[in-house]
Image (tube, rainbow, N blue to C red; front, top):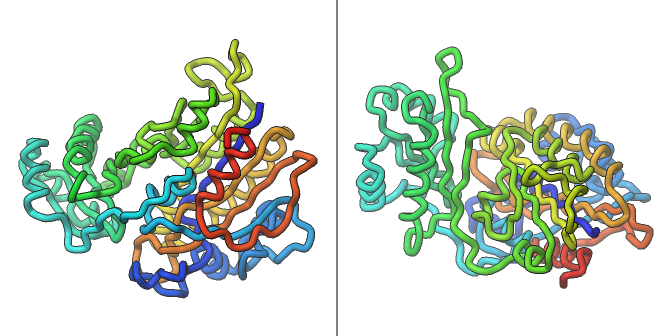
Length: 394
């Protein structure tokens, strides 16, 4: 059975897009290279062998003449620098119209609709903010009023934060579903994000495993739908199911950390991942082909948005250290893509995503697979095209 594995290292961009200043980003933004430099070099021997050091000045990963993979840089055609737009383009869906952003907060009529439909009584916040800072600033008032905390960023997101001991998790999720129904048409918001937290030693701490993303539904079928239509299966690991609103996903598992996402990806490659309480190896009628699609979000959520270049570097090293296990279990029928969906450079001013090109590393044990430089590729959709070729559905 032919299989493709896509690992998206969330926000690991590798250089400013030519139009970055249209998105209020500076030409110096380069998440991968700047994180490597800030850390005095990264210890990423596997990605170095794959050719990541050939894509720029990645301190600690010297350029290689003899690589074990294909390497290149992809540029985004779609307008935006958010998770949904990036992942959709990776899956072959290019957006002509960007999602709306709300740098001054959401309009009163929208907030009034949200309060009326959720019956929450009122809201706190409603301005662009770092998620960790706003819950620190408004936690005490949140406990007094029991109102949810609403905030956004430079991206098209409507984020709802609550202490789950004040507003239960199910109620938070229901608020998000109501917001998702409102934030369509002229409002055109990409994602509603549930941001639950609790108090640890009196300080607000977000609960990563219970975060949920409520994306707008893809307006057209993607590569994922094509795989299902050809009798294949698509396993979404991490927030993939949320990004695609379950469209084109046959099986999904949410994760609480990069480590968990990598472990689940390894299990999937080993055919040891339980899907509907059945391992793929035990299927009576094996699928025609399979896509394992993983998002590793810690780089973005825990470190990029918090300007934590040290944690970001450690997260990249953690991923690199795990890759040999995944690659070792691959067969000649497998191909692995490692890429990103946008940037979030923790070394430049601001806490938002950065409009960046992204690295692409492609590996296979297949004897016919040719390694080398892919150059600069004009669209993230390259991944979708290559996956479909590999799986024989193009």
